Image (cartoon, rainbow, N blue to C red; front, top):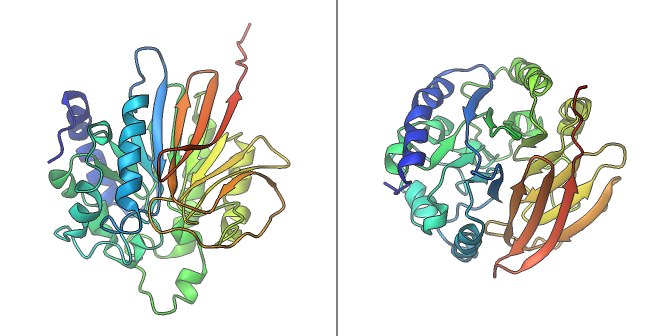
Length: 331
């Protein structure tokens, strides 16, 4: 079992019953987890997606650089934006792929922090309940994976959204794939409940920063492009509740796109292993940065400032972006 330190171990024990509730339940209720800030009131996070290939396709090299950057930044946790285990998720809680693609790859001391993970479409092709099962935390205590949930860190709230059920083609035209819809079907009820819960949680949030995390792209110029179901169903809720960032994977690249008609920023960090798709298709919003290769992203947040940095497989900085937020105080 990974050595997390006393604070992370305590967090893992507190979350065990919460995760168990999410694992057993079939509703879309958002579980709320708490994560402390640093003593100076800041938070530092790494984001990686589309990685689980037992070290192949430069997964190990990306992991090495994550460890180095994680040490420099003294990160608080890691966000995984899904497609955690290729090609078809986990077969069960005893599937060695969990250790071969996760525990044995992300070995740096700086990465021995909680990993908050959502499911991707490839994860849904396996035994979803195994990947959600808190038994996995006995193998590696960092692993915190639920369908949809919240992480509150005072100045920022992260809203993790289970996006795979939104994509209609997975239901009506799955080709040669099998999707594990246990706890999700019927689709319409699940999505309706999830959107209602997310909207309510966003409205109740008093955090300075609101960040939504999902697997699927909302805006992308790469292989998968925009996900129309998310633009139709999810995007209006994000805009209505003044969400600052939507973070995703799915497309195996790194990119930053700005909304033309709102402050919302779309950030893709799907370069955890196999990449280089060679596809570029412009969309209606504003492309700020695109890298068709492997890498990962960091977020550094204070109450009034956020820094976003993208890194390549060698740990080189590819792109930086920052935003300030002027706080409004009641008189």
